[in-house]
Amino acid sequence: MDLVLEAADHHLLTPYVYPKGWPEDEPFRQLLSLFAITNLGALALYLLFGTLSYYFIFDHELKKHPQFLENQVQREIIYALRSLPWISVPTVALFFAEVRGYSKLYDNIEDSPYGWPGVFLSMLSFLFFTDMGIYWIHRGLHHRLFYKRFHKPHHLWKIATPFASHAFHPVDGFMQSLPYHIYPFLFPLHKITYLGLYIFVNVWTISIHDGDYRVPRLLQHIINGSAHHTDHHLYFDYNYGQYFTLWDKIGGSYKSPSAFEGKGPHDYMRKLRENGSACPNGDTDKTK
Image (tube, rainbow, N blue to C red):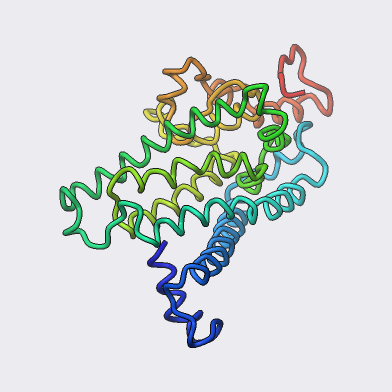
């Protein structure tokens, strides 16, 4: 995050926002700047990629599903916009620690313990580490002690749109992002790689809420895609993972997506169309 902060200082903050005599490395100034940058960046990622996904990928036919709420898209966006500033508070504290040099982030490839191979390995280890962390945090948030207070708001969206991706209770949102922020304090990671991964995880979070279930057949039971996460919203106790199905299989919470078996929301809508407005005969859909 110090790369972003330096760029903001150089091109905007120092000449136009802060007094000339306020040093760029002064802690309080850095906290203020990081708070603004984090909120603006999160807002831009959410609205830009959420909007693109909503208009070009999300199947609007799903808005006719019986479990789709009235004014749901507006409610998802409003909930996310209210939560993001609160999520950013502890996030900024971690970014501040990075900027002050407490992480293992490095600037140059030469600083990588294993050169370019180390950079690529760190990308893979980041994905597997964060997938593991999110799995256990997410599963923990489904415990009765935490679910109703923190995680249930995200499950209001049974048939989610891309805008549901960041519509979390602030505690829930920060806890599930925590593995991303912990990683560079434990393992070496190139700074630009970290920024790229940070953008990727936000886009991925949007993608698993977009209702597009297409995954290469060989990867259908390896990659945790939108079909898997849709069943998580519908059935609750399955598919807690973020990128992969590995930890769901280890933890006994894996469910083959109903969309891959002809029983997903799109299939439900097709049966409704075939039968008029009545529920399909013999329907056992647990989403009602």
